[in-house]
Amino acid sequence: MTKHPRSEQLFERACRVIPGGVNSPVRAFKAVGGTPLFVQRGEGQHLIDADGRKYLDLVNSWGALILGHAHPAVVAAIVEMARSGTTFGAPCAGEVELAERIVGSYPGLEQVRFVSSGTEAVMSAIRVARACTGRDLIVKFSGCYHGHADHLLVAAGSGLATFGTPSSAGVPAAFTGCTRVLPLDDEAAVDELFSREGAQIAAVIIEPVPANHGLLLQRREFLQKLRDVTRKHGSLLIFDEVICGFRLARGGVAQLTGIVPDMATFGKVIGGGMPVGGFGGSREIMKRLAPLGDTYQAGTLSGNPVAMAAGITTLDIMIKESGWERLEQISAAVERALLPVCKDAPFPIHFVRAGSLFWMSFHDGAAPRTAASMSQQAVQRYSALFHAMLDRGVYLPPSAYEACFLSLAHTNADIEQLTRALRESLATLT
Ligand SMILES: *Cc1c(COP(=O)(O)O)cnc(C)c1O
Image 1 (cartoon, helix red, strand yellow):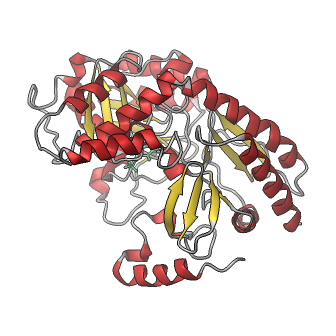
Image 2 (tube, protein in one colour; image 1 turned 180 degrees about the vertical axis):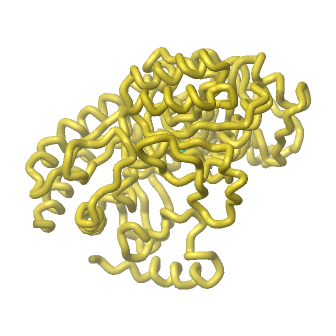
C-alpha cells in the first residue's frame, strides 16, 4: 500500500475535532481499511489528494458530479452568482429556472420545492404524503437508502414483511414503528402487507434503480406492481430519484420505465455539486405545503442562489450537449472494456450496469436483485482490490456495497487506464 503522509496527518488532526475524522461515515474507509484520502482538488475526471497524487475518480461525489469536477461553465456560473450575493432568504430567479427545468423534464411532475439535501427532500416528501392521505405508515425496501431521517433508518428486513426496528442508536422505536420494510423483487410480500395494512399505508418509497447496496436492478414488473397496488389502496408511490434522476435519463427512471410515481425526490445531479435537494408531485399534492396548505416545511438556505446557478448550468449542458446519450456511450464502452476482465478474474465478479452507474459485484452467485450480504471473503477481496486500484491511480468507492459513477469527463484514455489497472490489480489478488 502506498503511503499518503499528508492525508495521514490531516486524518489524525481531523479525528481530534471531528467524530471519526469525517462528516459522512463512508468517507472514513472503514469498509476497506487504511486512511481516507484528503482531497486537495478535483479536475474533470480526476481527484488530486493532499500528497499531490492524481486519481481517476469513479465516485464523483457519489453521483453529484455528472459533468466531472470543476466544470468551467459551472464554476463560472457559481462565481458570477456569488459576486451578487450568496444567500438572500427571499425568492430569486434561479429557483424558478431550475424548477422549470425539473418540472419540464420529469413525467407527471407539476411542482417542485427545493431543500438542501436528499435527506431533507425525502423527509419532506413523506410528510406531504402523510398529510395528503391522512395515514401514517410508510413502506420502504431493504437495501434502499433514503437519507438519514429517523423513520427511514430502519434495519433491512428479509423474507416476510418486518416491523421497522431502528438501524441506528438515537432513533426511538416509536418513530420507526410507522415504517414497514419489505424485500425488493418480491410481489407476494407486497401483496401480503397491503392485504393486512393497505388502508393505513400513506406511501411506498423506493429507489427505482436501487444504487445504495451495490446496484440491485429491479424488474419493470415489480415497479409496475408497486404502481398498481398503491393506486388500488389509495397510497402514494414515491420514487427516490436522488441518484437516478437526471443521471439515467433526463426524466429519471419514470421516463425509462414509463411508470410515473405520485411524488419524486431529487438531489445529487440537480445541484451540480452544490447542496440541493428537491421533491415534487402534482399541484394537487404539493398544494398541501405551507404557505398554501397545512403541511409545514422550510429552509434558511433552500433554493440557494449559488446552488441554483450550479444546477441550472449543469442541466443546460446536459440538455444542449446530448449529455445522456454521450454518457451512455462512455458507460457502454466501460462495460465492453471491463466485462472480459471481470470474466477472467480469479474469483467471480459480476459486472452490473444501469446507464452511468456500474457495480462490480463480488457475490459468489449471480448478481443479486435483493439486499443480500456478501461473504466475509468477498468483502476482503474488494478491500484488497480497492487498495490495489488506488496504488494504480484509480479511486473506487470505498465499500464493496457502493456503485461506481461515471461522468461526461471520462475519456477513452481513462477507460484504458481503468481496464489496465483492473487487470493488474486482480492479478495481484490471486
Ligand atoms: C444520497 C441519497 C439520499 C440522501 O441524500 P443526501 O444529500 O446525502 O442527504 C437519499 N436517497 C438516495 C437514493 C440517495 O442516494
